[in-house]
Image (cartoon, rainbow, N blue to C red; front, side):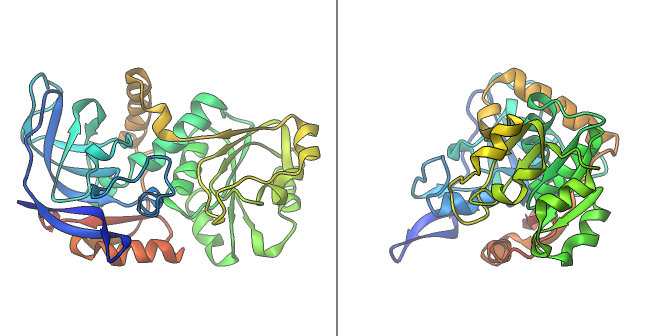
Length: 333
């Protein structure tokens, strides 16, 4: 038996728990691997609280990202073999959640563990970069001369947006609540940092972009935050809403400034874009090559022991993080 991370009902509440379960065998097209590290995401907290668009099942394993060593492959698998080092590409099916000392993943949602990456880096890369890839690269087609806004920029997804934006040649404006994270975000690659607590967010963005405004917004806050930057949108701006860190899972917009520039809002989910094999292959190739070339690399904030998962999620909820939070199992130590 191996320990896994679950969401289950405890004393009338949904809670994270660690329990031993029998280690299953991989079926056709599946790969089983010994997990060395697990990347944590805010989507885990949403799933715990029933706020994720994937309905919460009890009990249910959690975890979108992991890396490890292949121990067994199912019928028809030729892309990897026992002993290979692999990472899991998030795809949203709770049946294949990876939090634990072992995981089973369909072979099409695996990628090689990047050379030179630690276990924490390998487990913490794919969600942040793939989440940014589709809106910035494929939908908005961001390129040189464009300016983009990355909100909640010190989160792992925000940092992924900064790095992908820079890779595509854009000028990246990052937003954060307080000035305490300004230097960190500039060091992470942002060209300019907008501090919400300093007021006039639109004015700060316009100054940072030479009066042109931003053509794409990688939006993790939602709620009423749209009012703060509505006057800093470039003509045809595209806003990709992938989170609701404001604490309010709603959208409130000032209609006039959005109409004035013909802005578009898309409610975006990475999982919706990873349902097709072609999309998985395209994004895995682009991001994989960028990682191999050293053009992007995840910033790891803190690494917790697997058995301290509850402390790790409490730290995530505090909002103090600057990068990825990772759990390492006994096999990485």
